[in-house]
Image 1 (cartoon, one colour):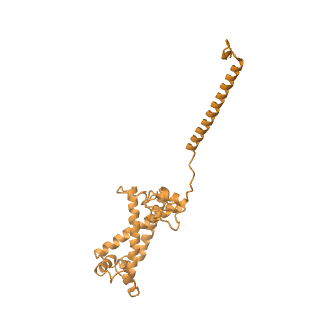
Image 2 (cartoon, one colour):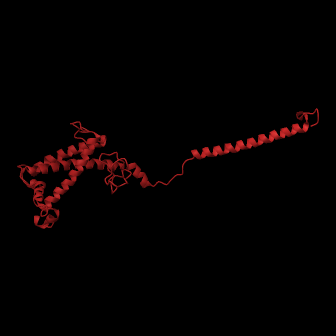
Image 3 (cartoon, rainbow, N blue to C red):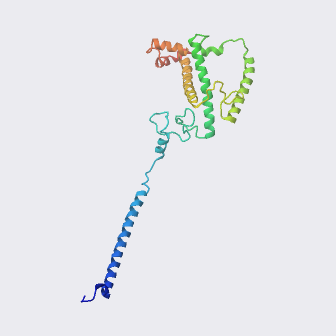
Length: 251
């Protein structure tokens, strides 16, 4: 500019300054928008759901059953209807008998009743055999007890029928085992989850033991204690393999 004329008073200079300021503002705005987009993309990626991996039903059952013991230690699959809520539930139902919830409750009660009968039977057979009370247990039914069979049946059938009818009706109404009108029947105050598991475990063991006692009586024709003594004295000459070879001579 010439003498006496300043830059801010020149029209061309003012337009140039305005264009420069506008260009600078536009570039700044574009950079700001691009930076915001990049930040938004990063935040969206950070909060995005991770890729979903395929999980099989077998794996789901493995995770569900991991908190309890199964009947086979390395088994990872438990039937869906056996979720560990029943006493003594270790996921064992290869035939799927308990798939129906109504039948599962009935089977549970039936197993419990048979377990109790088996525990009493094994305890009675073992005790009489160990103390040598009477003859062999499998011949007790043929003994003469000075009580006519017709009279025995006339008393036993109605008494057992009435008690069993009361038991099944009480179980249907309460879902608990009992006697007469007491459901549950617990005179010693032992009705708890821990004792329920112990009862069914001992009951299952007693059922297996009773089957063994019966088969042993058929094959060896003696009681469990006497057979155990013979096996201890001669383990190789008196065992299941040697005795079963002479099954025909025991009848």
